[in-house]
Length: 247
Length: 300
Image (cartoon, chains in turn orange, yellow):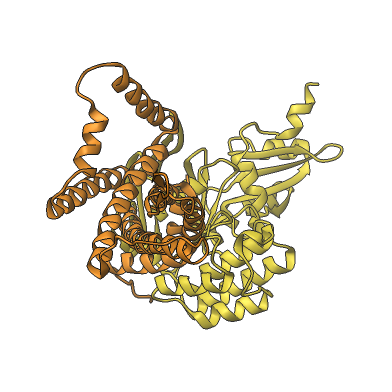
């Protein structure tokens, strides 16, 4: 007689996490692609100012990883949406899985992707400066303040990317429930933008932006980010937990 | 011990009743054939057992647990069909490795030997395989995972004759070496008949028959003879199929209430007794209009 095996959630999630690192390798190559593109765009400088007198003219160009950051944000959003789609969920169920383990391993994967995105994003900011200096013959005055600055940058970028993953995961999940959300969500978002521009009531979106992007206290910032991400993932998880696969 | 217990199972898809009051149980280490016409609800039933989809009403227990979202059911069972999907980034060899990561009973040696026997390329990709090759590859995963509950849903789709025969033989050999509960759904009843111990026949989401294959052979008999004698003989008996074959000759399939009960009587009445091929019997049982496709053209 064949004896039954038992497994637990942690074991399964661990297996699925390593499986996904391999299976979703394409998302890392698209990260590289999108960041190279962003670096090329950044080489023109993200802003410039100039002044001059009779004898002298000074032109200051700003190089930063802002553009790369925005591109990476979009990438993490799209990656999260992608892994909620039907083929990706089906891959899980070809092997051992339930809906909870599938989502938990997805979240771990998105966390890893965010970390990697954060590191590469900050480092490619430095790369832009180097390229500007070496190949474009620009005199560079770097404003970055050493290792602690870089680590702080990576950390903050990580939290933003993770938040965008959480948003993307929820959006993807809603679309899996009903394709109507493909229309409803953009309409809602753009509609809100117009509404805020045209009426004089309390602006919801800019308050939201202020809440997340303008927080000067680092620990408060982390708390906000983590709580919001957890809340978003929990909502997605409870929706996905009831969804049938391969029907 | 019953591996699967199913009571009053019901499944609705957009108000269409796909499974209807289905109750049965499947014992451990038996090979059961799930037979039914297209759209009878075979795949739906198997997907509920595998925990892919949710039952609407009724109870389903696999290894004494509800399969939907159960990790223990997932680790002890595998569902193999031609829609099994794997990440396109993984090569075939890597997929086998990953399967080994998940299934505790995974037999890598068996997988590798079957893989080489069917001439797969380790560097190949799953989505570039032909239909028959896809089924063959999925079958390898199904066999090598050695799950206590192994479900094959139309496993031979696209396979050529030689591969189909190899598959049945491989399945039987590995079953003997490593007994487990196996459910196979297939349209090729005569091909898998020798493999099966039990048969579960469903039609329109309902259970028609669930019995050992030996009893099935005695379940009905066919008689052939001149029409008058035959008509007299079948009076009061349950007729499953009736057809005129040639001048004044009739071929009728009737249900036997108990094994062998009709054979003697038929001999005495002077009609010829022939056994009914199981595949024909299933067709008769699941054809709603007696007379079949011929009836469609008769009134023209």
